[in-house]
Length: 196
Length: 304
Image (cartoon, rainbow over all chains, first blue to last red; front, top):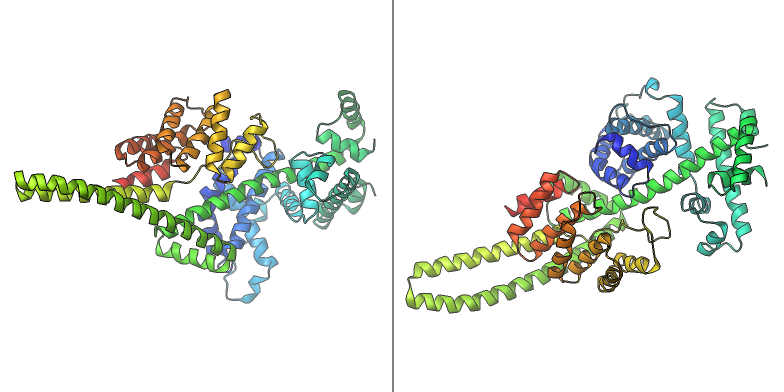
């Protein structure tokens, strides 16, 4: 199975493909992250590894990644490097002085589309309850509002619909605000898109 | 219908043909609607993708934990791996609890295997006693020593096979149908199959076996037969399991559990101490260079 076969299998929702890839690269990747950033524990290295999959699969399913020029492994390392660097600085660990400053990933290696896709991954990844469950049930498991009532504590389909619409609107608003902050769109673009 | 409603129904493919055609015509002349649709599609794609990835990563973590537990319990980790693993366990109470449970289960398996071996040894010794007495009366003490060596060697071999079986056998995780209510497009799910799979997932193998048998009596289905074979191993009917797997062995290469069939045939034969049969299937898996390559090679090396 070559790397482009893997892309196809992700596209068609192969129920084992991510599990297999995760197991295949887990040891090497988390080892690499922990070697580069000795202050990271296994849980943090695993979170970064999981986020790499989110970016990778999100790009495949969103149609931004249809074929791979290098290898999946190198793609992962590129994303992982960037994510680890951001996480390292987010936590302010560089200020300790005892940890060597890692090499900064080159901005050239990180185009606008990839930045945007990472922002989307992080926004959706930041979903909390009850929005996470509601949106997953509706969009991933393709349940109707009525079926969601049966699966949750909501009392009516209307309540479910209102709540999940609010969740999606908030999610869009957060994502667009990040794009505004990063100068990818303007504030008026944001207002126009969410109908304000 | 409100704009948001139409976008939602369009993405979920819930518009009628007329509504869809009307919506698509409007998209051509309304750039804002097109942009809003693209934004919603991007977000929905990411929600779907993240749920898909989360589900599989959860599975991968469980499988990796299981592998680590086994390696740790069987003392197959390097010193560095062991130190890292112990550090992770110390920092993670859930992992610690799972490890303790695993240790207690493996302890039980070992105890049973030990008792089984003692019984086999006792039986062998009783038989051996008769033979030795005959040999003693009719032949030299050198022949008797040879027999002692032979039985000792057999005992060692069986013990080794029991250990290898215990450390390699895991009931195959259901990836045939989703039992959580989600839908997999390529498998038609009926309620009876769902309850059979739920029993299988809950490790109620006698119930799963009965249900799989009932399903197979109505319609032959190689995938279901595969899960029947695993349930049979789990309920101690290893001979029947080998029969089921032998039927599957003839399936073409695109059979969903082509390699898995060979792997479980190897393990079932190992359980029955059929070393050469087991090695035959392991050799085949190594030659296939598929997902079982590492496991088959490792087991082959251990059996050498």
